[in-house]
Image (cartoon, rainbow, N blue to C red; front, side, top):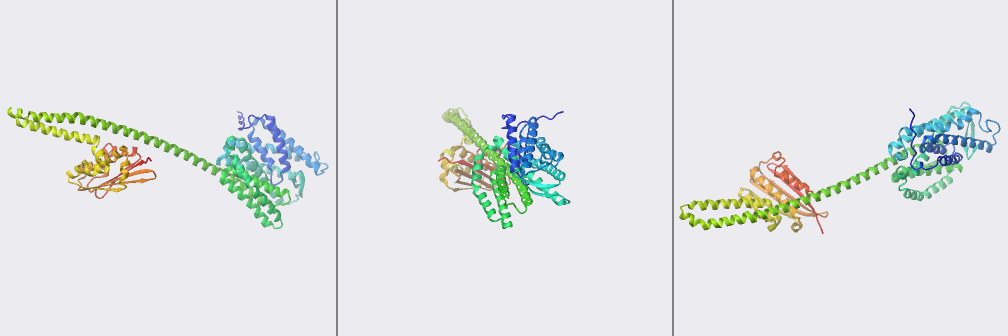
Length: 553
C-alpha cells in the first residue's frame, strides 16, 4: 500500500509549484545568511514549506534546499578565504554530504509526524495541534542537532556563522563538554527556528487564522517603542551583564501579555519580535553573557506561550459557543413562553365562551321553568298534588347551584367584578372556607396598584392556584386554619406575584399525584414562566406560587 499524498494547505493550492519552490529557495538563502548558531530560522522555513506543500512537491523542495546550501557553503568559503578542502569549503566529501544533503531529509521526519497526526494549519489553533507541533519540532531539532554534531566531529572544530563569516572557531580536542554545549545550542537553535516560523506561516496561509489580524498587528506596532527602548537600554547597560540579562528577560513580558490578549497568534507574533530583538543585539555585538540560558528560556517560554495562547483561544471559543447556545436557549424559551401564553389565552377565551353559553341557555331556561312551576302551583294544588311543585322547585334550585359552580370554575365572575384579591377575600373562596368551618385569613402586601396591570391570563392562573389549594384544604386536610398571603411588586421590568397558602391540617406532599388539580396548575404556572412549590409543614402543607409578567410601558 502507498501512503496517500497530503492535501495542499489552504491558500497554497492555487500557487504554481515552481513559484512556491522558488520562493522557498530565496527565503531559505536569506535566512541562512541572517541565522547563526542560536537562531536557525532557515530550519523553521524548511519545516514550514514541507508541511504546507503536498508531498509530490517535496522532491523539488529537497533539491532546491540542497542547491542553496551548497551555494551558500561555497559563498562562505569564498568570503573567508578558505583554501583547499572539498569545493574550497568542506573538510571532505563526508562533511559535504552531512552539511547539505542530510538537512531536508531530517526535517521531513518531524513533518511526517505532523502529517501522520493529521495536523494541518487550521488545527494549529488548538491545544492538541500545538502539542503535536512542538513534539514534531523537538524530534526534528534533535535529529538536526545530531547531524550538526556529526559534522563537527568529522571536521574537528566548532565554528559559528555570522552573515556568511566564520567566527568563534575552536578545535575540539578531548573536551566533551564543548561537544555537549554545541549539541544543546544547535538543538535549541533549530527548535526556536521552527517555533518562530511555523506558527506565523500557519497564520498567514489559513484564512480563518487571518481574521482579526489587523487589530493584532496594530497593537504590536504600539509595542515597537517598548522593544526599541529595551534595545537602547541593553546597549547602555552592556558593562553590567546582570542588568542586560534582566532587560532581555523583560522582553518576554510582551509574550505573556500578547498570549493573554490574542491567543496563540499573539504568542507567535510577540515571540518573533522578542527573538528578533535578541538576535539583533547579537549581530550588533551586544551578545548575552550566557546565550544558552537565554536560548533555553526563549524555547521554554515560547512553547508555553503557544500552549497558553491556544488554551486562551479554546476558552474564548467555548465561551462564545456557550453564549450563542445560551442566546439560542433564551430565544427558544421566549418562543415557548409566548406559545404557551397564546394557548392559555385561547383556553380562557373558550372557557369564557362556554360559560356565557351555559349561562344564557341553562340559566334562562331554569328561570323560565321556575316561573312556569310557580304559575302551575294552583292548578296542581287543586288536583291534589301540592308537594310536586315544591320538589320540582327544589330540583331547579339545585341545578342552578350546580350550574353556578360550573360557571365559576369556567370563568370566575368575581375576578372581573372584584379583582384578584377581592375575589379571594370576599368571593366564593371565602364562602367555601368558612362553610367548612375554617378560619380563613388573607393578607395583601406590596404595591396593590400593580394588580390593575396584571394580564388576565396571569390573574386567572393565580386565582386557580388559590382556588385549588383552598379546595384541597377543605376536602382533604382536616384543617382548622388556612392563611393566604398575596404579595405583588415590580422588579427588573417585571411584575412579580407571590402567592403563599398555608394550613394546619394533615395533608402530605406524597399524597399529591400526577394528574390531579395541583399537578395541572403546576403545568400552567410553568408555562407562564413561574414556579409552583408544595412543601411539607408541621403540621400542614405550604403552597407557594410565583408568577412573573413582563411590564409593558
